[in-house]
Image (cartoon, rainbow, N blue to C red; front, side, top):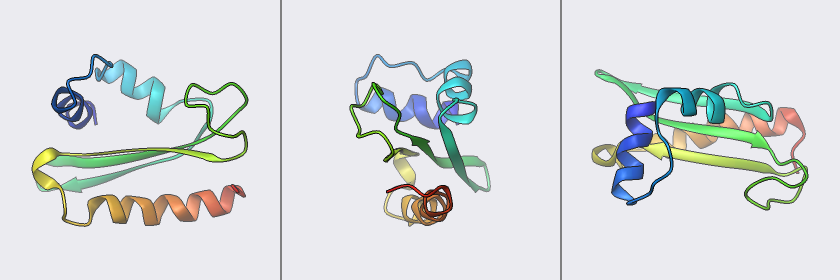
Amino acid sequence: MSSVLTEVLCDWNSARPGDPLHVLGAYVSHPDRIECAVCEGPDGIVGFQSLRLAVPDNAYEVEPGWGIIGTYVRLDMGRQGIGQALFAHNLRAAQAAGLR
């Protein structure tokens, strides 16, 4: 997941962290995490999508009770349905969690 995130962040020219410890805390084990889905290819993870509950004063200014989604796909794997598959998985998780 870290290599996917780092690749995307480099493309965006972003200084945001993408190291494994950040990925673990921000996506895999975040306290507001509802789901974190991954998509694997023959050579490992090619994309992931995080779904978190928006709580008051969240960093993204999303209305509390809504979902916060972060989607990252390897740059050379775009337009192959990875994001769509990840979203379909997390849509079910959002519905099960009762998100608005």
